[in-house]
Amino acid sequence: MSELQRLLNDPRFRPADKTQRDSGAGPETNLGNVLRVVSSLHARAELQKPPASPQDWDALILRVQAAARQAREIEAQAREREARIEQVLDQVREEIQASNERARTAEMQAREAQVRAEAQVLAAEERARAAEARVRAAEDRARQAEEWLERVQQAILSEFSDLTDQEAA
Image (cartoon, rainbow, N blue to C red; front, side, top):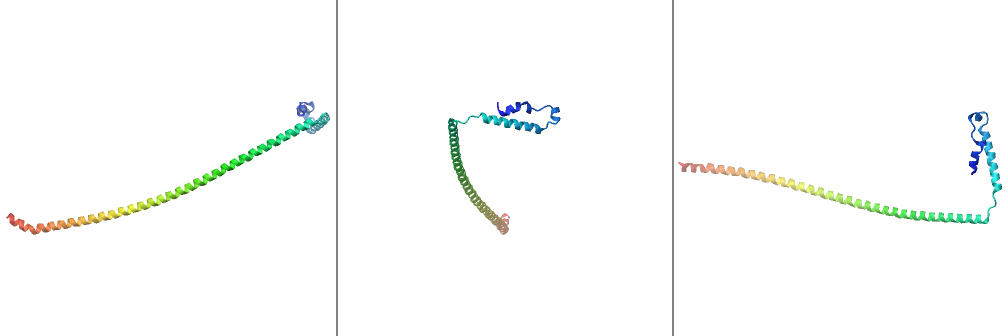
């Protein structure tokens, strides 16, 4: 049984009913009792301990060596993991840089394509305006030609109407 268990089972340290606690036995009295019992238990435990044998010391040294070996192994594993993490981080950094470069290249190509498209649109609009101007000019010439044909027809009819009227008579 552990010391703590013995102290908990000791009737001197069990909580008394409420009337006994209120009658003047304060926590200081219980604390003093606990300290006396604990110190007496420690004194008895020290007297009862036999001296450590060389085998105990050898076992202790072996345990210390095993613990140190395990600590070194854990440290080596931690260094390996740290190195692997650094490698992964370096790869991630390189991949991020490469993807950033690809993104910049794609953006430049997109801007260049946009500029070319805008230039083509402007050129097409200019050609459309020029074609519209040519259509208007052709329509104007066609209208003028029709007017002249109308005049020529009127002139012919008016000049030759005398001849047609004489032959009809």
